[in-house]
Length: 205
Image (cartoon, rainbow, N blue to C red; front, top):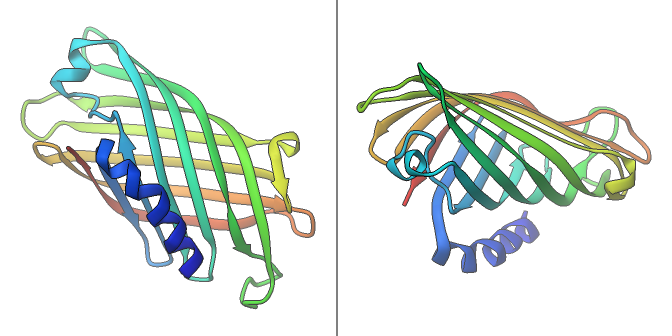
């Protein structure tokens, strides 16, 4: 845990000076925090004025059983306006690395493996309720790294996330979501780091 906190501090320290937002997602067993750079809500005036841009995020993931992960994501965003709503499709990559608990029940604190992966992925978002007040957005995200781009003790990595979020005030959005994250390692298959619903808050600066 101390190593993860030190790593997050090193990553987030310089990043906060250029931060465009902060995202925190919590469940009973996991926590994920990200500092977002060049980030704007799908329905913001800046997003409406152009057709997308780039989003960079750095952060960390921890779990109750002792998974400690650092991650960095780069996405190229494309925003389009339909006759009834607005949507975005993004593509990019995610670099992830750290230590995870393995074993049959993942309860032995000494049974850990170092993992890392460079994953490719996508993100899609749809503005369900266009509104000046409390717009609602549904989004999906997925990343996958095969064996060739997985390193240390990792063989494969996969992550799928869905979220439904509402703007509760300007630049602050609350959401409920679901994340499934797993690694295949040299010794174990389908090591599930997260398979839970969570609540979160995303703030844009």
